[in-house]
Image 1 (cartoon, rainbow, N blue to C red):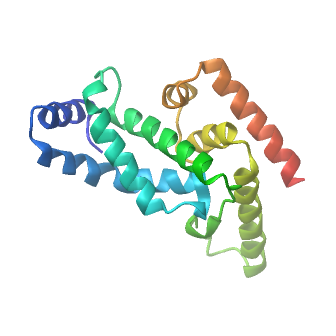
Image 2 (image 1 turned 30 degrees about the vertical axis):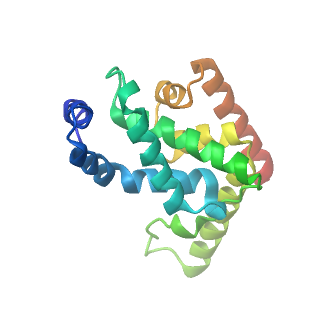
Image 3 (image 1 turned 90 degrees about the horizontal axis):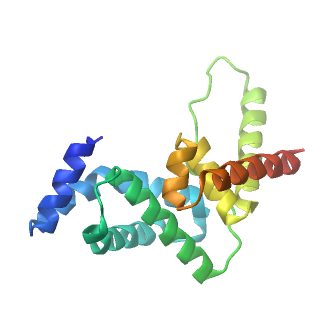
Length: 179
């Protein structure tokens, strides 16, 4: 992971005409962006295409980057906005497919326990896919990306109290859907 200073220096170099340095940003964040796109939109969008769109948007937005936060936070914000636009444009109901979200199975558990855990994960991810877009975005950033409430507020460009409310409602809705 690049340091804040490295991120800012690369942005300066790109803005000063060294467009080849933008490849460093893409290489560093491409997988992270693709994973976030998938977590936010499931398999309803062409993740590769949306990921490319995020980096096009980022390149065009670099002159507006204010060096007040990490570039990665700026990238997450752009990713959330691009996915939101694409989801609205496609106007499809998002369903979350957990097939790419496999955790390492505990080899000591029985096969039956593994199947039950997998079924619970699948149900959870489907339930996440049924949440309202803002709730889904907040809970994905919080639960899967370990973002703080402040970071989520920054990425989503909403108040801290709105983030708290979104996560609270998302957890409440998920609990209802899971029972």
